[in-house]
Image (cartoon, rainbow, N blue to C red; front, side):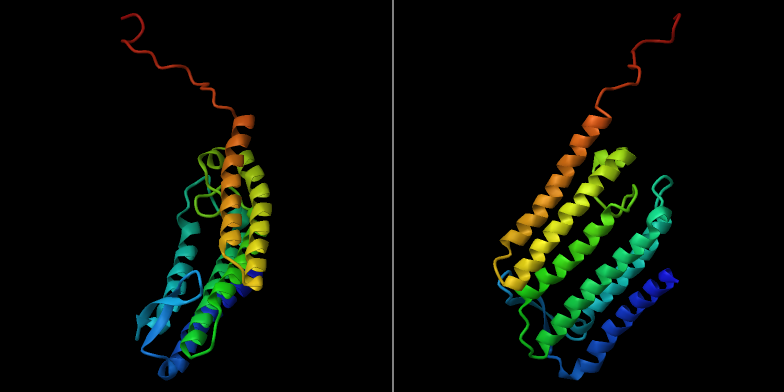
Length: 228
């Protein structure tokens, strides 16, 4: 039932994302703002007919890709143990893109939108959600903190994602507060970068502590077969 609800919510987001620009099409300018600088000023535009539907098309492509990835994941890296988490993350990403899409449409129709504040708030909420679910993932190639050391050890994956989840929740809160306060984006960017770097370094440290780096395989010797 929960799986069905998430699928319905994802499809509703996609349909609504196409419906809004279709209804507003005649009121939209010939060129829509589709990129903003760090000061919240538009510095990139996309003309009709693609401009109003650019983000819905991106959302659709991403939705299809995220549907496909669990089916092509190799053995040993299956999604069954955290499929519910994967679906929540997929829906959350679509919801974030839908949020950005609405902001773009509002800005295009003349509504004053402070993108330099709104986007960090949205990113912050997304990071808080992702951080809360990172610790529930198992080893895979598509979601999580994928370093050589987490992919080599289930235990290292588990410990790294437990810590990384907390760090990304904190980084998300920094982004959220920074957006609400309307301050510089530097603290938010620094918090996200620090969370990512600390997680990578921690995965190495934990792997070294648990597994070590000694070569336990017998050395390969040169020469012919024994007795030759």
